[in-house]
Image (tube, rainbow, N blue to C red):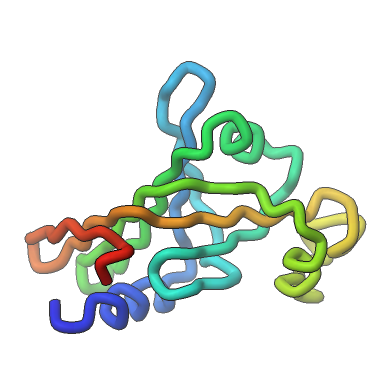
Length: 141
């Protein structure tokens, strides 16, 4: 892969659905389909909007270890990223990422209610393409 950040970034940007995984109280993985991230910074930092009282938010508060997965079924390629997920409580960040269309999901708007942001920071990854996989560390890209 000549330009991994561009190749992987383009794969991520072309997906409408992403998958995020948390760890439950018994140590088992829990995977949830989500909309695409609402913000991406390279291939290391991603933000998703979600409901504050959800199970996954409670799980990430207890154990921040996380995995995210993006899959392009058209070309049978994917990327898995492992790292940590944090709950963003900073109202400035939440307001900056708020979009009016989110009002249909969250009562109280950007300033209150159940609108919550998740911030994922990747440490390592694995890129799958043409029936081969390549492991990488995100700080090395």
